Length: 149
Image (cartoon, rainbow, N blue to C red; front, side):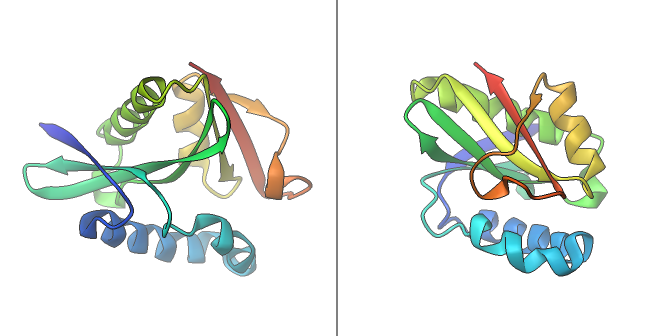
C-alpha cells in the first residue's frame, strides 16, 4: 500500500529522489539540461510529497506558488522500476488536494517533449495543454499544462 507524506524540500528522501530525477533528465534533455536546471531548484520548496511503499521512498512531487491562486507542480518523479503502478497518479492527486487545501484554484506545470510518459500521465489526469508560460515561452522542447481544480 502506498502512503504519501507531506514534507518540504529539506526531506532526505525527497532530496534522494530528486537526485535520481536529475540524473534521468540530464540524459533525456541532453544539452538542454543546463537551461532547465535553474527552474528545478528545490531549496525553497515548502510543499513536497514523498510516496512510500512500506518504508521505501517510491516517488515524489512538489508545489511552488506561481501566482495568487495558482500552484506550479514541480519535481514529479517515480523511479523506473516502480512506474506503471499508479504511484505518479496518486502523487498528482495528493498534490491537487493540497492545492485545494491551500485555497488555490489551478495547477500548472511544464514537462519536456522527451518525456512522453509524463505527457501521458498529465493527459490521463485531465490536464490540458496550454501555451508555454514564464521561462518556457518559445522553448521548443517544453509542453505546458494546466488543470482547474
